[in-house]
Length: 110
Length: 115
Image 1: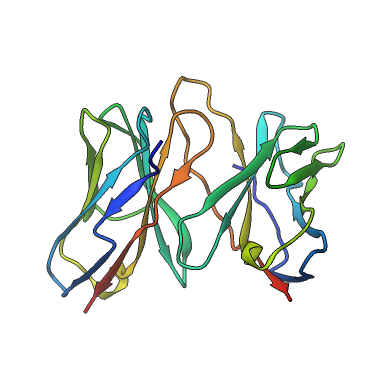
Image 2: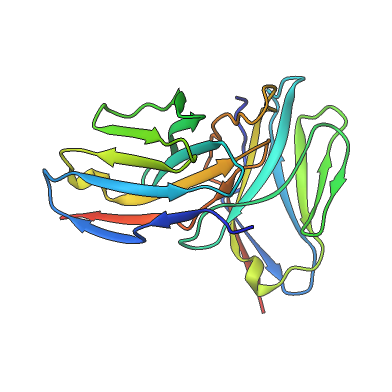
């Protein structure tokens, strides 16, 4: 099976812009989770989607949102970007208990 | 989810066993111990998990103490490619089909395998 894929791999944006990141889970996996990783805060959970419904949400402002499509692919959106949003955004897919992570999208906000 | 404590860093000689400890003294009866690792700038990789019995797979062995308050991940023959941050996480196993709860990552242990 192909692994988790994330696009784009790298992205540069400026403050105030918005961004959409995409994640394609492993075929057959219905759960997709998103995480943000920064040097200061480490890996932090953003939200989880299962069968197109958000099941869990981390402690992030409303500027961070996501959705999941019927084919389990997921997108996350960050609006009104801030410098502090610069991070590695990781997507993980799961069908049982193990989570399989993608390579991440490196977002730089200038 | 229970909190875990890991040493911030460890070194290991190539070819030797790497033993990574984790304390989880507040673990509850239905929480499993999971280990993931993250090689620099890549996504975390699942290694192994267990409840109370020792577990072994092709990557590593997991030894959980009888009181379940601590565990050790063992890489039997460390290679340079095992240099990574290793995360110990405790959480409930999922009950409903296909659902996965969030993973709460701590700071992990930076393992450096030396030639």
